[in-house]
Length: 246
Ligand SMILES: C[S@@+](CC[C@H](N)C(=O)[O-])C[C@H]1O[C@@H](n2cnc3c(N)ncnc32)[C@H](O)[C@@H]1O
Image 1 (tube, rainbow, N blue to C red):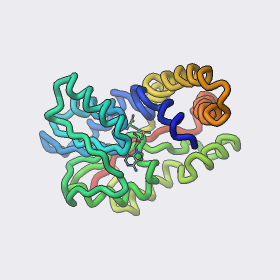
Image 2: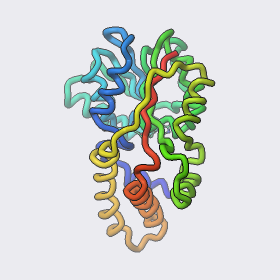
Image 3: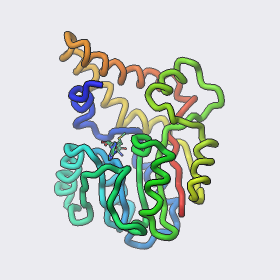
Image 4: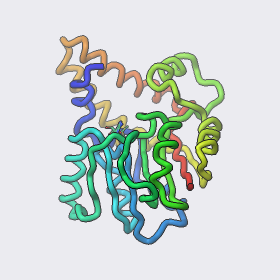
């Protein structure tokens, strides 16, 4: 894929995946054994909307990790603007090879990011970083119907072949040695308001800008296809918030 257009599409959006304050709040409220000032690791933080929601919901400190420096800069500037920079640290690192000490975090948060290294792999890599009774809160795109339509199956077989249904993810969670606290499907609004609506606006502008550039147009159209499929088939798959404890 042409990375230049990929990052031009994704730069400056409010979020980089489905999510909203209500879902982050609901997930956080299910983690009842957290200390008063938890140390939180926000993995694949992107521009950081959920980081700021977590700062609002907790009294803790957050280490926000991403491997795309412009997102970290956007996040840090926003932290300064909000006057919360003493509670956030940004770290440019690969979330599949983190160098934090074992047993360091009360909570690992990963909205829309575990898929980047594969959900199963993420469960395995991140567990040692959690303290005893620490939590992992992660959203993962998951089938929510038993028999998705063929065109949808084919699209996601190419884009994310490891995508599973909820039952299979619960099995992975169990096999990786976590206790399931709870799970819920994100509402459709969480896809549209902060993510697909601004993304779609941007695709319209960029498809005009690059109308003579077939390579860039192909990337723009792939994003548009993803949005169109969700518009048509949102009953068949969703982002699921999985709340886990070690
Ligand atoms: C779909 S976005 C989600 C961003 C944010 N959590 C949100 O919900 O808006 C996934 C993020 O993970 C980051 N990412 C992908 N692979 C990564 C890796 N191996 N290590 C660290 N960050 C990674 C991307 O740069 C991107 O910001």
